[in-house]
Image 1 (cartoon, rainbow over the protein chains, first blue to last red):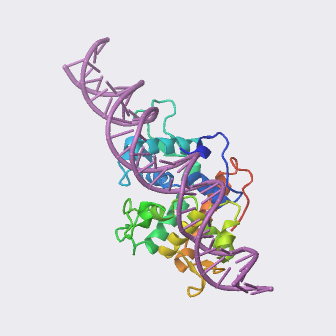
Image 2: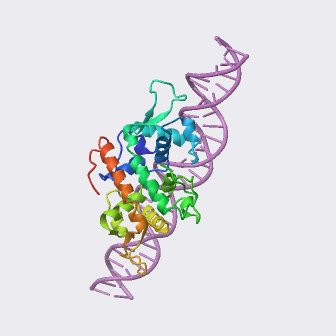
Image 3: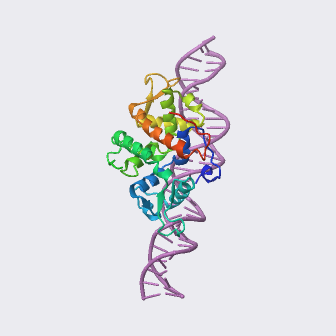
Length: 122
Length: 122
DNA sequence: CAGTCTAACTTGCATATTACAAGTTAGAGC
DNA sequence: GCTCTAACTTGTAATATGCAAGTTAGACTG
C-alpha cells in the first residue's frame, strides 16, 4: 500500500477525471479484482487468489481494503466474520463495467498479435 | 522499466483481455500520456512534462518508448531527429479513446466526493 | 467442548519500480 | 564555433510488489 492510499486524505495529481481515476485504480490489480466480481457476482478471498493471474496475498488484502475504502466493493454481510464472507461490487463498482468492457474490446482488437491466447469475455 | 516490458516477449498474466490490457497499460502514467495526445493531437517530450500531473523525465522516456513499441504512439516524423519531433497516436492508440471516456465519466460520477476539483473534459 | 482444520489475513525480507536531482548529448540559431 | 535548450540518461533514495512463512479465529469433528 502506498503513501497516497494509506493517508486519510488522498493526494490527487490533478483535477483531470482520467488522472484521478488512475490515481485510484491505476495499478495492475485493482481492475482485475473488479473484473472477477463482474464475472462472478461475489468472490471470497481465496477465490480471488485462485484467479489465473496469481495475485499475492498481501497485495490482495491491501487492494480489497482500498477498494472497500473508496466504496467500490463491500462485504456481502458486513456483520459476519471474515471467514467465507464474500465481497461484491457496490453500485459505484458496478458502474466500472463499461470501462472494463471498452478495455477488453480494445485488447481483443489491438493486443492479439502480441498475446494470441487472448479470449473473448464479458 | 520493468522486466516484463523490456523483454522481447511479454509475459502475460493470463488470456483475459482485461488483464492483458492492464499488463500493457495498467500503471499510473501510460494512459495519462494517451490522454494528452487525445486532447492535443501531438505532443513533444517537454510538452508532456508540462502537464499538471508532473511525470518525471525517466518515467516519461520509458513510457514513450514502451507505448511506441506496442504501437500505441509514434513520432510524427520518423526520419527527423528527436528535437521537437512530436509524438502522436497511432490508430490503435486512437482506439483507446472510448476507454478513457468511460473512465473519465466514471470518475466524474463516483470520485467527486473524494476529489471535488475534478473537472469535465473529453 | 477440546482439538484440528483452514480461510483470511499479517509480517519480514528480497526484488522491482518510481521519484527526484543531476548530468549528457546533439541539433538549431546566432 | 559557441551558446542554448529539448530530449534524454544516470545515480540513488523512497515506494511498491512478490514470495514465503507465520498468525488468528471461526467452523467442523469426535
